[in-house]
Length: 262
Image 1 (cartoon, helix red, strand yellow):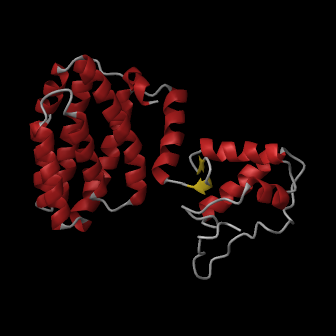
Image 2 (cartoon, helix red, strand yellow; image 1 turned 45 degrees about the horizontal axis):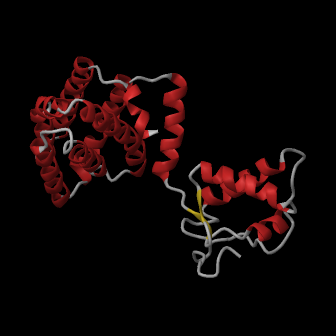
Image 3 (tube, one colour; image 1 turned 120 degrees about the vertical axis):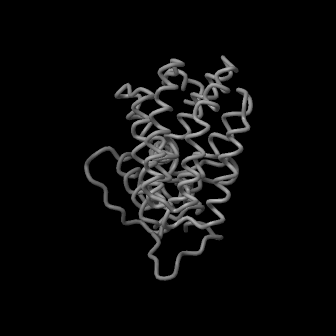
């Protein structure tokens, strides 16, 4: 069973792991178990928060040995789909942000993508974010975004800048009410904040230069959004990101500063 405390959604089919019958092809057994469990998680058959069957139950269901099951579960854990809690069991924890982070980290490192390229992609996403935000964000959300904008403006040293800046960017993306944009932007934001955190810890005065240089641009984005002016908001994003790239180049910030974030 998926777990005594877990209740399937009404009308939703859930795999009965107490019965056998799983048919394997003549390929790596652990890979097949991994693919099957991954499919069940992504389809919702195994829901987030539910407990996986025990190793013994899975071994019976898949007609495989315990070590083979453990290999598949370790792979699921490495993919951020499950979490092994010692003494409690293995639970489904699939988060879109974690999956996106894992995939995009691999691409960034494999292709040697630099920080300016990351900012280029961020600009494209932020323009879509503000286009949606002017239509769907509530007045309360826009007021909260204004507060977070002002919090960044008040941050003037390396110790205080990263978190307000992170909160500002995450709040901006959340205004879109679009889960895919939030997941994609989340990785890019965390990457940028990790670089800012590392760089400003080395050179505290850098925080003042970063925060001060872009102060007007951040305020322009907030003004345009509260006015529900999509064209002005997109234009403000373009200016903000152009200035951000200038700051990166002038202060020689690089993806190598991301090392502590990995």
